[in-house]
Amino acid sequence: MITPCYTLTQLDKFLEIAPKMKTDSRISRVLHALIHMKYADGPLTSAALGEMLGTNAVVVRRLFGGLRDVGYVTSEKGHGGGWVLDKPLESMTLLDVYRAVGEPPLFSDLVSHDHPECLVEQAVNAQLSETLREAEAVMLARFAKVTIAMLAGDFEAPTFRSTSPKRRSRSTSR
Image 1 (cartoon, one colour):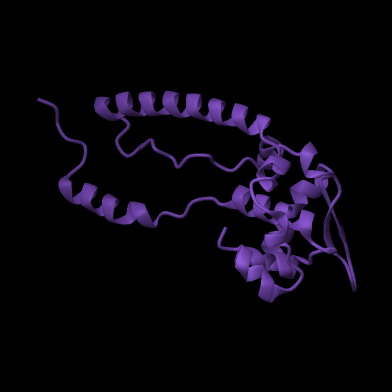
Image 2 (cartoon, one colour):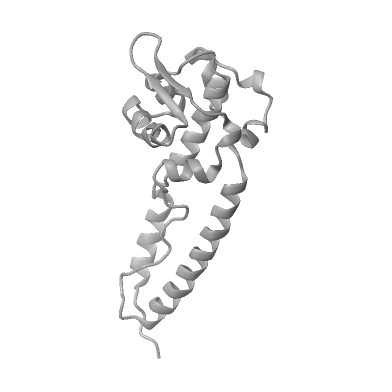
């Protein structure tokens, strides 16, 4: 007979907490901002981008630092300054952006190391780890084939064109 590694109480606690775990949305936020930048009438400040993305200017500057380092965006300081695209969206792939924002985890950590001596946990972790590696390879290969311009082409641009924070709020539901 196999000795259980978890009690029902432990599993109940995990199931209660699991839906509240925060996911990493850096790539989604940056893609959102890049597409808006294409249709912006001028530079977008970190504060304006932060408002659009539901975060603050410091987070925007941190996110965009990697994009600036690879030459996709530039920023100008001072009055009338802000972030602008330095390359066309056609030259950026999802993989490029994923790498520029620090390669955030694509999947939540599905393996557990609570009971490393447990043979069941070892077998489950081995299978989950291999499956995740395969899924990540497929996903990254797909990322390499999708340009940001392809994403931008999925909607009618004038509908999303924005210059003021009031009008920007319409597009955040996308």
